[in-house]
Image (cartoon, rainbow, N blue to C red; front, side, top):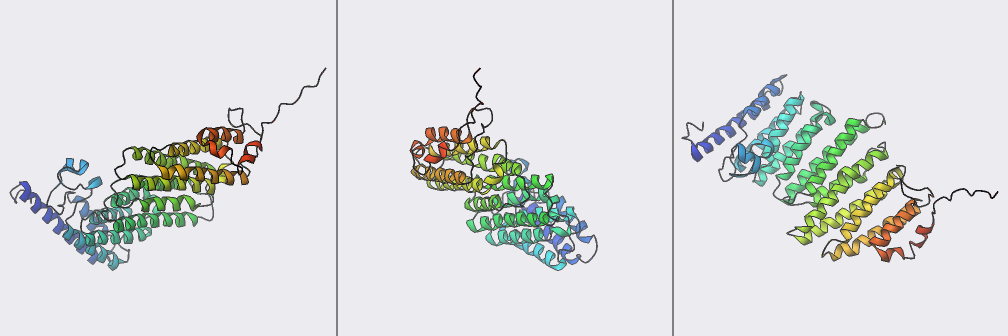
Length: 405
């Protein structure tokens, strides 16, 4: 088609129009064949043969290098097609019609389902609000019909990156909130699917999926191009505080801190140095501190059973100190000491500082170790009447006395 169009920009636009028209035909045909076994799979497979270089609103046709780094027009992230607004809205409608016509019955295989998910993600990347909404609705419908193809946890490694690409293509706060909401719904369905296993502890595979979800939300929180970073931060907080499922052992929660929460705060602090919108970044940092505090206290009883708890606690204190020292941030300078004080009071009430045992290779108890860090980090808290009792509750167990000869 590009050759017939004469090559160059004209040929590229002609080729893109032909691909969009072919997509219409494929989806319309799939909608009409949903009642026939295997027909949808065979038809949708054709979508995978279409080039991933659809025109955007300006008529630019990204080549292979542009798809990778965004040169020459808006990029098709991850090889997704870049659709014109008109085509996106129409293709979204075609896809919705196909799904409604078959009630999900045509999504008999994992390949068919994932093929449609990839195409719906491309539709949702449209610059046109109507097209983006149509793609989002198609994605939502596909995710709700995932059971027709395969258990959700089996498809998550392929599905989750597509949902992340969908969220990163958002251009408005409303679109972003819908995209993150869809991801949160997928996470909720994953919990329900796992909870239906008779109350047994989640498998290692499920735990890996769960950590993948947390890291995905974190990556969106750190994406400065996103029009609404509050949405993924709220979704992350809900996921971490849900305690889902209850059978998750403390070691997995410790891993969640190490792989998701701690790296998130570290990167938020790094972004603060070069922030172009200081007020927005400062607000996100404050919410990050709140997330750390709430999550740590929410899972405190389980975390205390870990032999490495003191390392986790010292890392949390280190991050709080770094946020306290964040340059030119009066908001954090006021909020961090209050957050730390609340954490210390709750830990004291939970008996965290009562043990007389030395922690790790140190000659100190957890209470003494904490007191030393707090004295350096926030001296005004060390002498606070509310906390004075914490530092003297636990002294190291004395060595047995040797009787005089």
